[in-house]
Image (cartoon, rainbow over all chains, first blue to last red; front, side):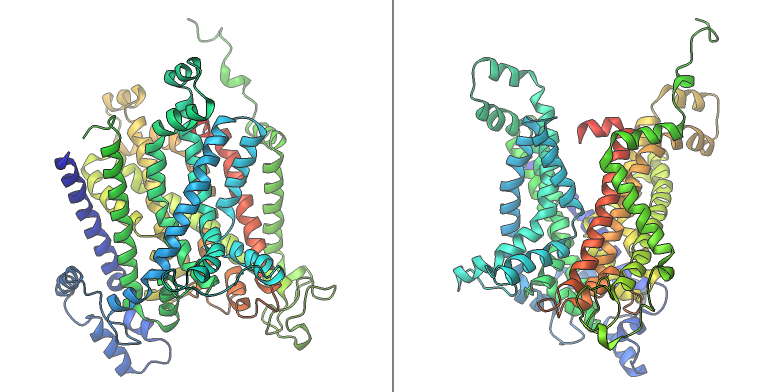
Length: 313
Length: 293
């Protein structure tokens, strides 16, 4: 067991290293001079030189790489060109809203999607199933921001039920938090619900054909218990996996959702950085988001290996 | 067993055209999607002749005008005609969708076949793909656009790169299954050169799932292009695209919601149509996956 955990943790190191190399290469191997692009059209030669020096682009490439990796390991993600503040500090300031939004979205989506998927599998082939699956295709296709604006239009502007912009911290203003987080959560959750519903339906459907389901029904087990205790429990691994993989969708979606609802989180940090051509921030955030994604998926892997005795390691 | 006497199952199969027609007849939603896409393609092609004006022309009277008989989709806050801009925006969206689909499928196919068939490269290629897949696609694209400057080409490449690993994985998994088939072993036994095996035996098995995958890539690329443009890291603002239109209308949304909602809903319908088409093709071309999904 401990050996497995150790191996799984170790296996993330090469992936993280490759992510670091890709992000490093992005700036250095792009055709043209990135310093000129980042500096913008109206930049003077000095400004370009300053950006080149601050990004370390004037050093030999292997030296750049070693310094960069050493800095990352020390928690130094570089310095913002625009504000001159360390990127890690800026990320720390904006972390809370994004984490809260992601958390509410995962909780909301999973608690909607899993029962929906089980229901669709139970009613496979009927109109209920088809309706749920159609909703899932719709959820996949509906762009996050379009849904966000439709919700703002309907519930914010027309019915005036909910505030349309901003974010309140749950620690200082729980009620304000609840009212501002509802629409962003639904917006961001849509595609995630679609994904998890689809996988839940597929894996439960597969399990429902097993002998032990027939046995459970034959002994007179209540249908609800057959579905949730016997079927869902045995179908849990692919569902847990997709919940982890879907985090990547959430990260991309959070950037957009925060822009639509004007939430001062990491997504807004990215968008502001794009407008100000503040490349170190963009680079730092890509790194942080990717590493978070890798670590979450590692934890999920470890969790279900420990919980599911069928998986040997 | 005589080869001539038994009726060949191949001969009884309806022609490809017939099969396609049947597919559409049995699936009205798919038919509808195909029609919607056809209309969009025609609208994009003939944009200058469909009651449009210059997409950059500013008309003071059209400024934030709601949809009306004169301006069908209304005007934006600068007074540009939204009907015109929506049609020209279709050009960008469909172009990005199809170019990214074709390019990422071709590149992914090549890498996937090499990785699946030549064991020596497999580990290295797959680790690189794992790394690429760990970076959220939109962020990778934002990063690529911000170091190379926004143009149609850079945006297309930036959207394409995050799509490639998924294609590589799909192709590799097919190759790994197919290479164990007796006919491939036979080909190896008689000394067929590797490129010929890949071309004649492996490639045909990859085509049906890749056609399905291409539709999903196209839908995802259209979505990413709009997202990037909306966030300010996509198609340059002087080119009308659905994402740009939404970004520009964002500030005036409470007073002129149609500026955002019209391109947004057009985008949603277009992506939905591509996805429904893909699902229909999947059910037909790839019954094994269809059953599982």
